[in-house]
Image 1 (spheres, rainbow, N blue to C red):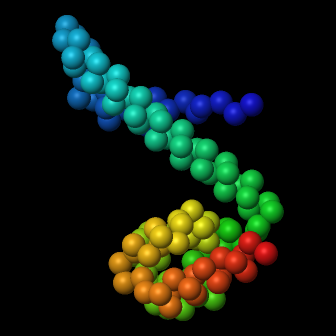
Image 2 (spheres, helix red, strand yellow):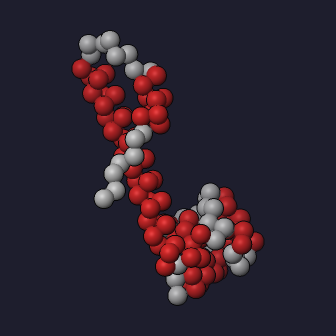
Length: 121
């Protein structure tokens, strides 16, 4: 069973601005909501990392760095601008999301889709 990681140290910036001596219920509620949002984000990142590790066992090319792929320079530049680091970073986007990347044309999108098909064979 996977448990949520201890994340108190990562939430410290929220604590810095919170006055625990205040009697304001609205402020307390806002702090609790902010704390929960940050924990949810961290939990999603943790689950994403676990999912990538599992998928990489079946598809080892997912961990290939973007620079080591046979994609064209244009495709790599577009993906780099979108902060994609490896093949798994490409695979999380749907074709319609990839289309939204700046300077993504039909040819480049087709090239990326063809490469992803090779990765998942």
